[in-house]
Length: 277
Image (cartoon, rainbow, N blue to C red; front, side, top):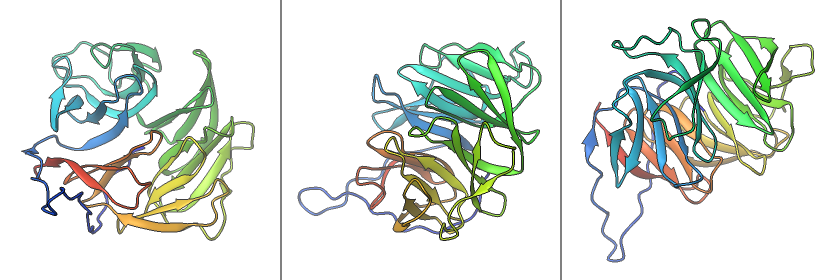
């Protein structure tokens, strides 16, 4: 999941080597703003969507894929080797702008338009339970079942969305004031508030088991159950958060300062890539 930048503080916990010395810092690179991140189930590689294209993280170094510099705003890994994205084409491209929803089945080497080419700039995309959700700059939250049928779920001012893989037709979202809400694709379009105990959050995602994971404006990571209750504070992520993904066994977070991974459900975060500010 992704969001526009917001400020926060972090205390990052790095893994230690066997002689109790901290491992060397990853090399520092310039990527620009990150819009999406995720692990591809087939090759277990991390893919990063940015203003300047989609990158693959290989041995701690980002590789620009296919020399494509498209502004990849929304991004989601829909399945093994299947990516969805949106945004704007590179300056030297003849593709329509905005791109609408596009799809790649060759690890971002090439993209095929699916819908809304020249019409929609989707800033948040998520896939779960046989559905594709997309939230665009027009404020429309849309859902697609199969490959062709689109339906408007709501018109709302949102920051992020996260489809629930355990409940078909249910999608969580955060509003511009950090409120956690949920929508039903068969509902009235009005947001349904989650438990009042839910902390204010901006970035959210849902694990494959249905737990909700979110980050608040100060960088605190929270984990709650599928009803939006029983919240636990875990660790804090360093830098200004830009994207989060918790669908795989390893959780990933991208910030202005780097890309981080957690193998203990957010209790600690290890820097995988350092980004030049």
